[in-house]
Image (cartoon, rainbow, N blue to C red):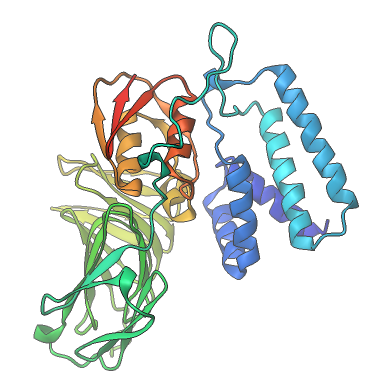
Amino acid sequence: MSAQNGHMKQLLILYLENRCTPEQYQEVMEWLRTSAPNRLLLQQMRDDFGTIPQNPQLRISEKSAEKLREQLLEKVHAAQNTQRAPIRRLWQWTAAAAVIALIVLGARIWMIKKPGGDYSTPLVTAENRLLSTPPAQGKAQLTLANGTVILLDSVANGRLATQGNALIEAAPNRLEYECQSASLPDNQLYANTVSTQRGGQYQVKLSDGTIVWLNAASALKFPAVFAGNERRVELTGEAYFEVAAASLPNGSKKPFIVIAKGQEVYVTGTHFNIMAYNEEAYVKTTLLEGGVKVSHGGESVMLQPGQQSRLTDQGNIKVEKAANIAEAMAWKNGFFYFENESIETVMRQIARWYDVEVEFHSVNNERFYAQPSRRVRLANVLTALELTGKVHFTIQGKKIIVDP
C-alpha cells in the first residue's frame, strides 16, 4: 500500500471511530469529493461495520472477538494476494483494519447478551408492510412566488420555470437556479420555497452558487435572485450550507444570512449545518469551514471551525468549542448518530426519516448509542434498536408503539 493510501486508511479509521479533528474531517470530506469510487468505498465500510455503539454494556465475549479477529485477518491475507482493482484492495484493507482496531481498542459490537446466556433476537419482522418502508427519497415541492406548487419528484429533468431573471432547472434530486441578472428592485425578488416532506430529502443550488442540502421535513425560503446588499434566506428544519463567496460593487463581501427559529446566522462564504426543528429543544449551528456570527435578540457569538452553538428555548446561546462534527453531519453522510440519546430523541429522527407515526406507551431513562445506516429499510433500524434489550416495538398500521 502506498504512503498516501496508508495515510488515508488511518484517517478513515479515525472517521469511523468518530475521533477526527476538524482538520482531519475536512481532509476526509475533500477525499470523498474527489471521486465517486471514494464515496462508494466509505459507504461500503459504513454499511458493513458502521453500527458500533460505545455502550460498555454491549461488549461481546472474548471468544467471539477472537473468532471475528481471525476472520478479519483471513480477509486481510486474502486481500494481499488478490489482483483486484486498487480501490477494492484499499476497501478490504481499510475495513478490516478499522474493525480490528475497534476490537483492540475495546469498542462494542452491536449485540447484547441476556442474563440467561442466549443472545436476544429481533422482535420485529420484515413481513409487516410498515417495516418495509424504504429510507427517505428525493421527495420535495417547489412553491413559486405566485403560489404555484410543483411536485419535484414527478417532473422531468431540464428547464422547469422562470422567476423574474432566474431560470430554474430540475435535475435528479436537485433544483438549480441560474441568475440572468441581479438588477431587479427589492420588491421583485420572487420569493420561492423548496420544502421536503417527512421521508424526503433534496438539494438546491441557489442563484449565487450556494448549495443547500435539505433534510427531511424541512423548508428553505429564498429569493430567485439575490439583489441588494445581502443574501437572506429562511430555514425550518435542518440543512447543510456551502455558501458561495460574493462581493458588492464596492468590493466588500456580500453577506449571506440564514433566519431559523428567531436565530440569525451571518456568513460570507463558509460551510455549516443548522438544525432548527420545532420539536427539538435546541437550534444547533455547527461550523465546518470559515466563520459565522450567530445572533438572537441582543446576544451574539462568533463560531470557529469545529464549534457548535445551541440556542435554547429560553433564548440563551451556548457554545460547544469541541463539537462532535460527525454527529452533526451524520444525516448528510447517510447514517443516524445516537450518542447518549433518549428513546424520544431517537424516535423523532426515525419518524422524520421514514415518515411514520410514533406512540409511547411508557418511557424509561435508558440511553442509546448507535450509528445505523440511513440507507436501509425501517425494519433494519428497529431491529438494531431492539437488540439492545432496552426497547420493544409493536406495529399498528402506520404507527410504531414504543414500550421499554
